Amino acid sequence: MARLIDGKAVAAELREGLKARCAGLAARGITPGLAVILVGDDLASRIYVRNKERACASVGIHTRTFRFPAETEMGALKAQIDALNADDSFDGILLQLPLPQGLCADELLERIAPEKDVDGFHPLNFGKLALGLGGKTPCTPAGCMELLRRAGVEIAGKEAVVIGRSRLVGKPTALLLQAADATVTLCHSHTRDLAAHTRRADILIAAAGKAGLVTGEMIKPGAAVIDVGINRMPDGTLCGDVEFSSAEPVAGAITPVPGGVGPMTIAMLLKATIDAAEERRG
Ligand code: NAD
Image (cartoon, rainbow, N blue to C red; front, side):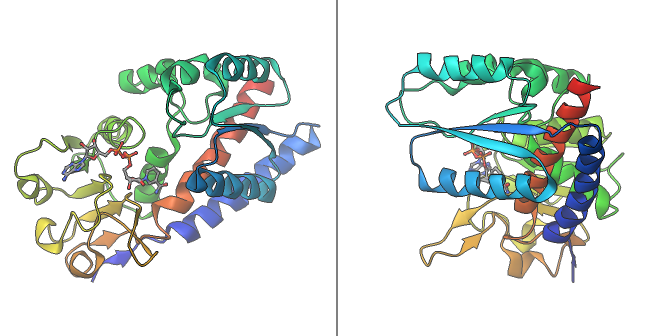
């Protein structure tokens, strides 16, 4: 039976540390600030933004959401980003994705000042990550790494397999694992015989967005399995990319969905905002 990697508990522990860091900054008259840009009224995005606002408040980060209707033009969004880049009260700027059709996320993400890019999506930060030069790291991959470390999973020298190559999750996670000295295989929708790869994995990260893609017989006995997927089932419940019932008896350690990577993503966003405040304000 696998050990459960409890993302909720790890995130709560992390938040306590972040609260203390915020209090330290407050004593110097500094309140870290996060600006969120939300365009359109996608329900999931609205829920994510509300959760982020609450999480920020719980550790002492000042947050404000700038809301725009779906038909907003690029010019207005660029002007908003420029204003936030110049606004000293905000250390982090987050553009909530996905954007409504017709808007170019790449152009807007590139407009965010790299030092305020708490999501780590700016090409400069992504390039630094690829080159192993530090920089800001996307929050979900950072959360996966933190979960592995806190669960005591050894990474150096291990075989790591990542399913999914998006720039939000799969690709940066593969880069982080590589930087931590794992031997990394990156699988995607064109991969032939996915199971042949996953069965070799000491560390398996599933981020495809396909419910039940990974079953127990695809997992190496004793492997650490991190399930990033969030899939809504017809009955309204959430499940990951890993079939938990068949995977859990085989894996050595496993994250649940919900309660695994999800809470870590927000905790890492809070951390990135406080890091940015400390970097910017000395
Ligand atoms: P995406 O759709 O951008 O990318 C999916 C990737 O999976 C692609 O690279 C694709 O090639 C690959 N893929 C799809 N089907 C595959 C298959 N059958 N075999 C192998 N590879 C396959 O998605 P994303 O933004 O990277 O998100 C992935 C999942 O993670 C989604 O379920 C999303 O909701 C979830 N997610 C969770 C969090 C969190 O905080 N827990 C954060 C971001 C995304």
